[in-house]
Amino acid sequence: MKQSTVLRFDTISAFHKMSGLPAPEHPLVSLVDYGLVRYQTTDREISWVQDFYTIGLKRNIAGKFRYGQQSYDFDEGLVSFVAPGQVVHLLVEEPPVPPTGLLLLVHPDFLWNTPLAKGIKAYDFFGYAVNEALFLSEREEATLTEILHNIRREYHSAIDRFSQKIIIAQIETLLSYCERFYERQFHTRNKSSHQILGRLEEALEAYFKGDDALRKGLPSAQWMAASLHVSPNYLGSLLKTLTGQTTQQHIHNKVIELAKEKLSTTSLSVGEIAFELGFEHPQSFSKLFKAKTRLSPLEFRQSFQ
Image 1 (tube, one colour):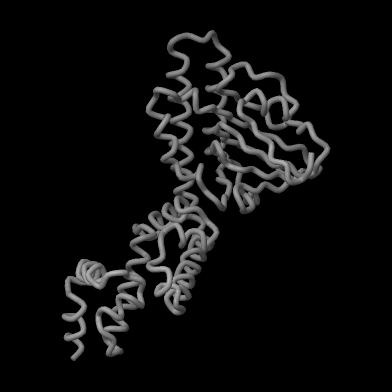
Image 2: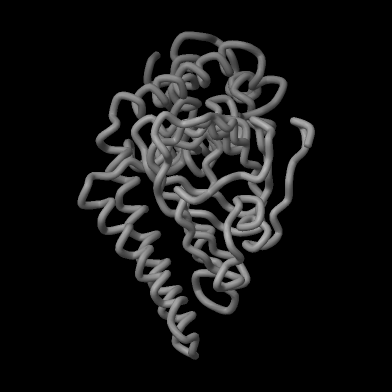
């Protein structure tokens, strides 16, 4: 296999086979002992796309993961998330201590005709372009581990008409706990979080200082996230947690700040200011300005005269 080859795992069985594991007991949901995984390749670098969700609770990760285009930080974290259709890169290294942990594999077909089929897409941690593993306290780790074992016990039992409902409920509980723990992580990792806020401000300053706004229009939330090397969902979640505002609101706040400066210190017309800030129509600029300040641009300018 060449380094550029990207494998495709369209079934959980295919992943089991590549990992040197026995066939799964259930075709659509499986809990894997990560300590037993032995990738069936001599290549040091593996890339794959999978058609199922993975929630991994892993310790002693020696290799380097990339999820999308960025490294997945396991320095302190334990829990990782991979969504269907995402590219995963793994640089395999011989660990000084054998890795341990659990991998929950869930095929979207298992969620079919349940609220979680759509609801699972609302969990932002599956869509992060730059991913930071979720770190856990001992109590939190025990909570998640117990839920994972509950899922395994259920599909080990005789399958009946209640099985799917019970397993789905356990998965929903697992995701809810992960959402709670990630929000706590955003709050406790203030240093790295505020570094992103600083980089956001620098990126907006650079965008409007040059002629990007005049050439490209207002920066979008997607552009903003890409410039910071994070996904729109990640950036939106982080900003909402830290500041209570969306990415678009942050962009609009910057636009209003610059507009006030131009209105109060230059003789540029409202139309000229609007175009410099990336608005195609001056009316759109005036509408946003009044919504934010309760004054029209001209009224604001007159207040300085």
